Image 1 (cartoon, rainbow, N blue to C red):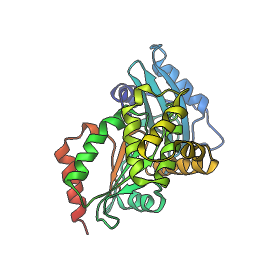
Image 2 (image 1 turned 90 degrees about the horizontal axis):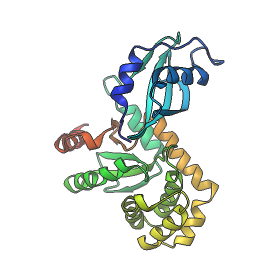
Image 3 (image 1 turned 60 degrees about the horizontal axis):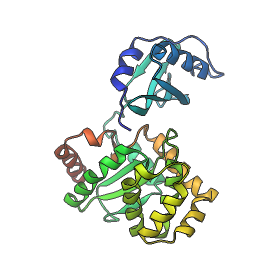
Amino acid sequence: MRRLLAPFIAVLLLGATLPAQQKTDPALPSEETVNSFMQQTFGYDSSVTWKVASIRPSEAPGLAEVVVVVGNSQGQQVTTFYVTQDGKHALVGDMIPFGAKPYEPARAALEKGMNGVAKGPAESKVTIVEFSDLQCPHCKEAQPIIEKLLADEPNAKFILQQYPLPSHNWAAKGAAYADCVGRTNKDAFWKFVQSVFDAQNDITESNADEKFSELAEKSGVKGADIAACAAKPATKSRVDASVALGGAVGVNSTPTFFVNGRRIANINGMPYEVLKELVEYAGKQP
């Protein structure tokens, strides 16, 4: 989702300090500490809510990565910040890869772990990966951009990975249905994804199974078979694996894209020509 509260959070977190309470690992703040910090920071505004999603060591030694789902009247977003080892300071912003070939680790991880549906040339010099949430309105907004990009860059390969956000009440079920449709019929998969985006406002937690079965049927597969597949533990495991892969390469919001391992978190806010140039540049690299 678009980072609606990012500037607000950044101003507050950059000057904040954390209490000294710790988990068993002294480098990690406790959930109690994080909640206390959030209360001290946002408690004056009753419209702001939050839920701690994870607290874990970051890729950078000495920093703990804290992921919090923050919401207000504008919507929800997943926010990540990093806590120093002494538990007294927090850093806000994206941690980006560095080095002579900074995007190769993410590219290698994606190539190894991707289980989404692909379209475009199997052997391509450019692979675009999207981590998407079918309930996310910004993912819906990104679809025309991607369609135009793939039309302009026919030699690029595109893969859609499922990344349902925990703050969405039917996204995980939608991801399960999409996974099953994709393994049944790839052409039907793309029709199903677009039809779910088109019907976002009509789908609820209570009618999701009925809607997804109907949309799957209209996409060219048997809705009842897809519903049965979506309920299987193996399907949930595939979706969970996609979410874990996203987390491993730094995904914390949707949609998030990778062009040969280079992360692009806000495709909707990027000038189209810049995006196109990035894809073309990636295709020229050895």
